[in-house]
Image (cartoon, rainbow, N blue to C red):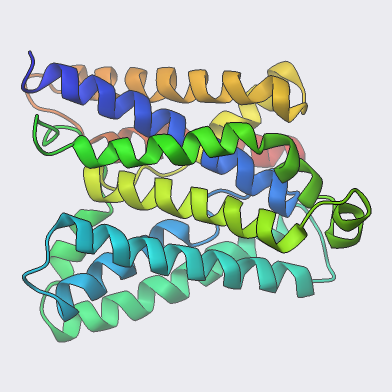
Length: 273
């Protein structure tokens, strides 16, 4: 129990809270309900960072991979925000479509380099979230996401303000660029740590904030705790379901969340349309 079940439970809770909160903050900064680490290329950028770490520092450990993933994730988020600032057509569906295309470009570049060095199979494995390998001694890095989540809680209202635009933020005495960079750093750190620890968990940061918004409204200070709680519960439920469907074997959590989250995402899209 101490070696596997407790570490796995802790990792599920932190990953669920972290990805859900990241999705909520990104949606507020871009002012779009369908923006999340899944739909703006954040997960693809983290994968590229891990790939570059493996290629440039083959003997590097987990920390090196996390650092590269953090740098690439942060840079890709900055580029995406710059792109959205220049887009005049602000349709709620158009922005995430641009993000998905941006992520596809990043993924294509990563696949090219992985093919050149014959590690395509390893690279694809990084995008499959799986808690089965979470054991004592292999999950502790996920604790690094806790400070990022705490900072997110402390600066929640400021992230809402920066989503209103640079001029509006400055009129309220807020340092727009510094707050944006802090938010992107928190998101990048959390996504990178979770990616290194358990792999990619798609759609969690998209679905949970939207469900919470439907149930409790859009007051960030009020909905942030619910978003964290629902994210942890939803991920735990998907993990339990994945372990029961083909028992004694296990369906990876990335596939479970991707399937259920994808269905919910389609429902949200159709409802919005």
